[in-house]
Length: 375
Image 1 (cartoon, one colour):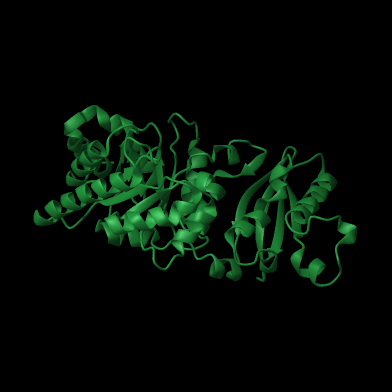
Image 2 (cartoon, rainbow, N blue to C red; image 1 turned 120 degrees about the horizontal axis):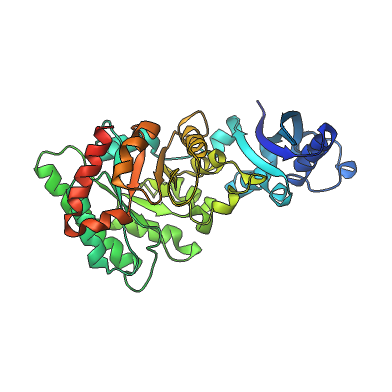
């Protein structure tokens, strides 16, 4: 297959209107000129998007498949996204549902460094769901946050994730905070090893700062002893994450947070499907873990939408399969049900509710593990 394909949901009046709208998508996402002035030859035959088919889906909706050549993309992720849903994102009634990559896309955008199997090796946990406490809240000192990191890591957490709201605030500046927290988790891991525990906690530092500082801060985290980084592609850009994932000098896994991405999925008629944004595009951009709101929490994603995200993270697609990570207002009593829905290859987030335990937060980590194991 010398072209990759994108499937769109198209809202239209009838078949003819749907086909015209599909042709408009193909034009807008590539050459962006009237069809009658598209140059014959290479531009028309290769660069121009091509409508493959348009079939009825439901009342007032059609599924349109448009194929694109890699020559319309080049070798940078921003232009790939521009081709997938560039100008068409400004059209009403167009929603991108799925991407079928070809060999060119897979070669130029290889995805995550670690993925599902790599994170098993890094943590030493051969099976079972991952226990992931979220270290918060912002406004806490670096020492306070480091204490939480130590207590949760020592109690057996698999991934100790900083809250995405921890950036570079004066209360706990990035470099100071990451140095303290990495040291705390490192100490907890040493104690676990001394006690015969074959697993270890991975500390994921939340990247703050300016857009042009992402690599610098990520490298600082790596040098300070962090085991991964948390990045917000909705703020820093998918390309920032992709650049890190493909950087030969950066060797840590990446967790992607969904902040600022809600408007891309919440409209039924525009943007991306949940699976495409939080699964496929995260994989393309190099995330090893994709965080998303669990159903029944405060953000309102449905079971079907969450299941779609998980399928896109784990199924056939660009690069390695990655770990889904549901969270958002979760509590310990919901973990068994979550485990039954999401299974073992999943990072289970719990944040604010753990703080009720105070200095006994380690007990909550034990309860999380018991809840996951007993599902």
